[in-house]
Amino acid sequence: MFQNDNDNAIIDLLDKRVRKQEQRRHFFRKSAGLTAGLATGVILGACGSSGDDAGAQTGPTGPEILNFALNLEYLEAQFYQMAAYGRTLPANLLTGAGRQGAVSGGHIVPFKDPLVAAYAKEIADDEVAHVAFLRAALGSAAVAQPAINIDGASATGAFSVAARAAGLITAGQTFDPYADDNSFLLGAYIFEDVGVTAYKGASPLIQNKTFLEAAAGILAAEAYHAGLVRTVLYAKGLTSQAQAISDARDSLDGATDLDQGIGTATVANIVPLDANGIAYSRTPGQVLNIVFLNKAAVTQGGFYPAGVNGTLAMSAPN
Image (tube, rainbow, N blue to C red; front, side, top):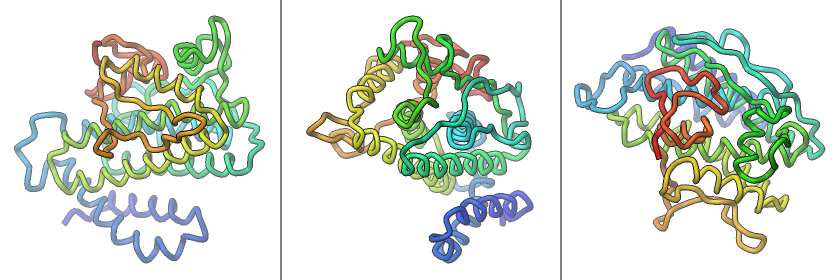
C-alpha cells in the first residue's frame, strides 16, 4: 500500500548496512528483507498520520518525533565517523529543512585495542545507516544537519565543557575523546545512554502502533550500542569516570534521578534499569538539557552551538 521510490531507497540502504558483516549476510537476507520492507512502509504511513490512530494526535507528530531523533543521529554519526575513520558524513546526508551547519572538531582515534577499533567502526556504520534511514523516511520533511561541536582540543569545546562539568578535568584543561581508546569510550558514553532514553521517552508520544514498532528497531540498536560501550568501560576499570559522567547528566536533566553509572569494582551495572527491570525515559527537553549542557530552558549550546532543527528544540527548565 505504501510502496514507492522512497521505500525502495530505504530498503537499498538497509541492504548495504547488513552486508557490512560478511558472516551475517545470509541470515539477514533471509530474515531482514521482509522486515525492512514492512517497517519502512509503515513509517511512511505513520508520518503521514495514517493508521488506526489518525486524528488522535495531541502531542508531537510522527515527522516531529523523527526529526528530533534525526538531530541526535547527526551528532552520533559525526562523532563516530570522525573517531573511526577521520571523516564526516557525506554532503548528500546533510541537507534539509532549517539551517544547515558545519561540524567542528574531531580526528581519527589512534586505537591500540583492536576490539575497541572494531566496535567503533561498527557503531559508526550503524549511525550513518540511521541518518540515511530517517532522512529517507521523512523525505522532503527531513531537517538539515545543524551546526555540531564535537571538539575536545580546546577548553571551550563541547567535550571539554562536558568533562569539566563531570569533574574529569579542571578549569583550563581539555578533554580529547579522540586521544586514545579510553577517552573515546568515555566520549561515546556521554551520548549512548542519552540516545536510549530519548527513544524510550518518545514511545508514549507515538500514536500509530506500526510506527511505534518500527521506531523500536532503532531503540534496540541504540541499546545494543550503549550496552557494548558500558561493558567495555567496565572491563577497562573506568567505573569512577563513568559515574562522574552519569552524575553530570543527572545534574542537567532535572531533580529526578534518571541516570546510572556502570557499577563499582565489585558490582557491575551494565544495564541501567528501574526496580521493575525497565529502562528509564527522558523527555525531548531533558535530552536537550544534556546535549546543550545547560540546566535552563535554552535553544542552543554545548554540542549544538546554534541549536537543533525542527519544532522540538528547547531544553527543559529545572
